[in-house]
Length: 107
Image (cartoon, rainbow, N blue to C red; front, side, top):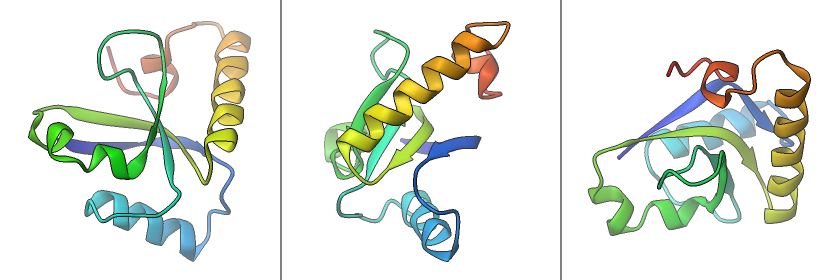
């Protein structure tokens, strides 16, 4: 398993030193309390999913040979839901309702 954070990742967190520290912890697969990630669907259902970050560190996900594209980072499940709403609104307002193209992930 490998994490790939979108260049235009959505977040309600301030993009300061603490945010950069959080990104480093994610890239190093270190546990972070109270962190939720918005990802592409891991099992081909829907357009986005919300996971508690620490859940993705469990052996089941670590054993999988896949890239997990992170589209949003939030400090609570409610904030993650708001970010999903914002992403869907922005997708709706752009010309192409394709999440991979919108985040520059190809496909």
